[in-house]
Length: 407
Image (cartoon, rainbow, N blue to C red; front, side, top):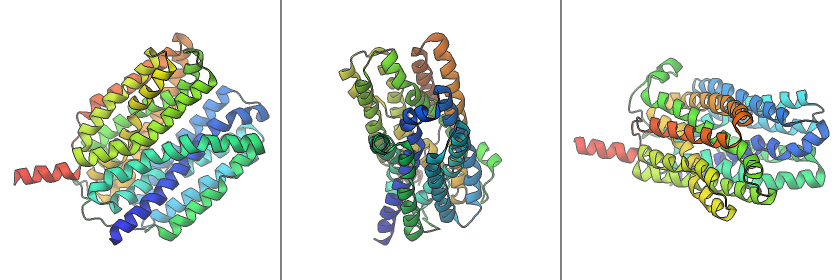
């Protein structure tokens, strides 16, 4: 009962914590129309601001994730990261130029990078086997979907409309410091769950070269590159595509984008929970097949009332993120290497899918039209699907069945 009680408490705190990371990360997109007017910025500036955060997030996730694995203070690195990105977000409200905003967004990326690898490392060790996928899915996908994409936009826009965009940034300091305090009071620094053992031992020290030789880790890195390409391309270009190509009004576009947010939240825990029961690999394959259809819905469905439910039903990829970015690697490597592996997968995927692919998609859209970005997104999910077939199963329920059959 003690373990379950702590497991639930840790889940709630890390859910709120990582959800707030995406609240801060996506805040710029929602506040940009207000900021652009005051600071005389354009869409190129927005692209550079997003890219700066993505690059620093990726590099920080890889380096600080590995650093955390070498220390006995993961909890305190996590708390310092939360405080640091909260301060950077609040200080964004004081900027007077594009350069100063760029600096603060870059620093915020540095602070946010290690939050997910460390959080999932702690959660993987504290979770009971039958709930590990569900717990990690709630933190990895449902939290940013709910807090960052559903709750965040109306709150930020309301504050910016009534009190100014600077106040919206200042207000983020309060929840950030509350989350840091909760982590200090209720999160343990060490978790020793006996079930979390590697299927293929890689040694006790986190060694990136050794990790890259592991089949599952290498495949998860490649899947991350192409799946993040699917996600970032869709989330970046769909609003413009819906208005310019489909001719939808801003209100209709907002409703469809809202459907994406709810799908992000719902599939985030549904996919992970199903993987606890039926295995990581088959569930990843099935829902990636469905995710391939999402860009096709945007391309070929012209009626908004038909498109909205179909978008919800096919935007399943964010639920799959937890499997290749957290649960499978956490069940593949020793506990001492989990944060390193997760940071590596997230970091390389972010560099390729979060920085390179949107730039390529933008140039392609200028040459061939906005429809091309949907084909780029579909190609990303298709490659991720093919790679998923080569993963080794890691779900405890499947591993235990295989061992019993062998005996």
